[in-house]
Amino acid sequence: MTAAAAGPTLTVIVTRLGIDGGMDRVVEAMAAALADRGGEDVRLICVTTRGRLGKLLSPLVFAGALARCLALGLSGGADVAHLNLATRGSVLRKALMERVLSLVGVPVVVHLHGANFDDYYAACGSFMQAAIRTLFRRATCVVVLGNHWRDFVTRIAGPEVATAIVYNAVPRVPAAAEREDGGVHLVVLGEVGERKGTDVLLDALSLLRGRSVGGWRCTIAGNGAVERFRARAESLGLSGLVTFPGWLDAGAAKMLAGRADIVVLPSRAENLPMSIVEAMAAGKPVVATPVGAVPEILHDGVEGRLVPVGDAGALADALTVLIGDGEMRRRMGEAAAVRHTADLDSAVFIERLVQVWRRAAGRTG
Image 1: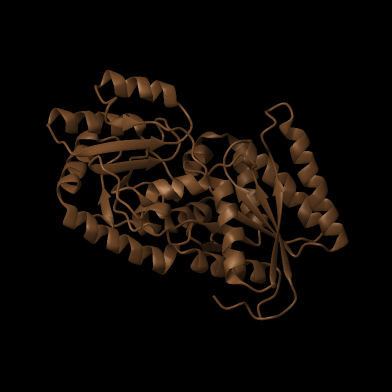
Image 2 (image 1 turned 30 degrees about the vertical axis):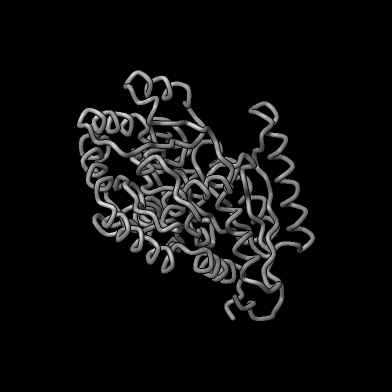
């Protein structure tokens, strides 16, 4: 890709949790996309706000992040800050960071993550609700992952809040050189638990087994309640068909997505899950639920299937058809790859973010 036009370097503070979750994968995608983009017109300074030191010591990590932001602002070492926002403690951390950064003249962009942020807002109490609204209103721009979240932000904080839709993205993933034996490979990437619908998936797979639908196997990769759901799979008679490798780093997750035949994510709540973006980058059909911004990038019958939340029967029906129809899988996978190139590729993602940062910093040229 050609380098960006020459000009003064735009220095951007970007927050990361430091725990290798989905939000940190977005930050890694930013850095990788900037490297691929070329040029020296944008520089990221990553600031860790929580880390792996546990609840007792994480305030020390955050204090260090605040001190670094203060120093960068006072020295003129930052042009804009990009605060990645999720639920719970993230709200207070980012509200404090916004105040510190604003006091030293650094404009703030808030990037809304969190699968159930709207539900969290409804239940979190008046103090936290006020903090969230104030954070959105003080931000130069709120980056959201789809129209669902834009509507949420403007509904609670007002239509005057500036928003920008920037879908999560990853680079194109080449197809696996060799297809593994063992039948149609179903892959799930994400935290193991009820929010991601692991219970619904296992019930659906049990239905497949009961219907004598053969020729498939399933890998459920992620951290969380792994042992509990491994035991549940065994109790359903799925131990020879379903494996739980645990958490995978980004490289291993991409490799697994490349070797999948169908990627499945029957979540109860999402924002815009990276696992679906990664699946489409690999040209794989996806079976998911219409939650968050998922229906904006995945259209039922085109790039995959959308099934109702919590409906194991509907999920089993969709999987039965796709397992038995290789041509449908190929056609949907090709459509997924086209969709990825148009809206979910890293090059598209980073150019949209750079434009947001430049506007926030007053560099519109």
